[in-house]
Length: 201
Image (cartoon, rainbow, N blue to C red):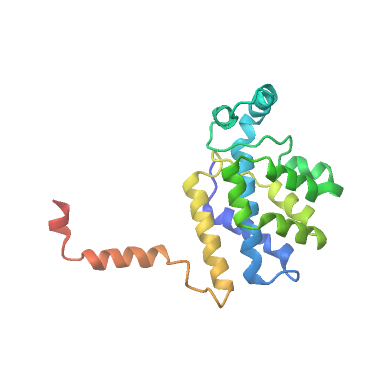
């Protein structure tokens, strides 16, 4: 059963309660967005994880380019060869940062690049030093973001809603990133008003 994008956005936004006091509101998105993305990728790869690990174990010493084989097994354009999942990281609280860093490093290059652009590893160190990392992993591990539960369109709307909220919390960026759908529809109606007959042909 798919969830409403507002429910997903509200859940993700509730993570801000953990960050309040240690981070400025303008920085919430720099933590929440990559964690939400990580959980999404984690859920997407869940059903093929064993097959990917088996294929990696079989081919890692053959000296071949592994990407094509592992992508075929993951049925995605990306994969992860770590034994970890986000929920399994909770089994070793003392080494949560090291294990999460290793988990991120075991993604395929394109996925790793996204997290590097978020400067996610540096944020993990900071979160760990502030005693927040385990709680964040626990929070995100509790939500199912698999596409069967949260379709791509719903996930896109949820991210869009989060971007809007992050923009509104920062006086520096308010209004820069988001135009409400109602305003876009109104603009389109105004632009094409009177041309309906011509355009319909």
